[in-house]
Image 1 (tube, helix red, strand yellow):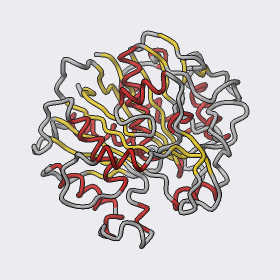
Image 2 (cartoon, helix red, strand yellow):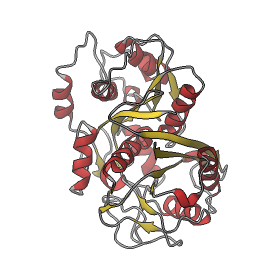
Image 3 (cartoon, rainbow, N blue to C red):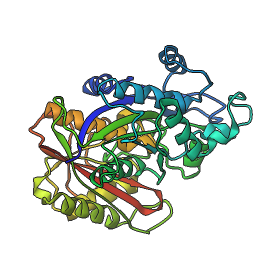
Image 4 (tube, rainbow, N blue to C red):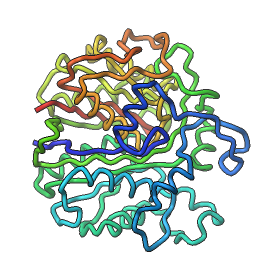
Length: 379
């Protein structure tokens, strides 16, 4: 078995999973109007970490070199997660998997952090920096496949443990809100002018967010957890460079394969953490995939209304919240959702609700037709 033994979230809502979960219980959102001409000429809504709060949190971190914004977020997240375990990150039996879509993309600006080496814009270099900082002897695995990166990274980590390559794997991921990213989504006209509304009839686009998150998987059970990785899979619908399949094909296949690997049927799922970006086509596609699998009555949540879309961190952030939901037997409401606005009659969680959660599904979708799923179960 592969166990989930510790996790962390660094976001505008807090610098630990507990802080973030408590903030979600209060239906808080990190999304606000950002007025920063260095990011975009006009104000736009996004969920961004306050720089002074990040710098203050990093003040106590031993460091002999300068670090980028993203690197600080990742280091803080990993250190907090490690503090909850007795894992030796310097061991050859401990692997590191990094999930990100853009990494240190802000280094494209030659005036940004002039003391930082420009080659740290390369994802491999970011991964090497993290392993060197923590003294890990292994080559880091870098996973960058659009917005399914976080879920794929967890699936990969579980596989590495199951294959006997490592006893523990630290999966960490993050992305920042940058000029490059904001301009790209603006060009798609996919950003909402206000906080996003997943699965709602009035949804009109996504909200960007930034975060870092870390989840540690292990072959060893601890006294604090009984949550196991039950199965995972991915599939590509090859529909369009940015548009999801109109039939939900890739998501349907990924979930079906994950269920098969887990050795369970769709009726065993108690709760679904959807991708739920609040774009017209993504939410519709997910509703179709859920409907095709006969899971219409299974409660579905999206956390994009709280965190925004955190890209390479999304699958990790949302899985960390799902793990806490399972520990508490509590489903968090979908912030921004009021009235169902997809064609399939799915069961979106509109109020925070107590429920026994024994087996749960995490969904993810991304550009290029990519889709992924993973299943968590109580041992």
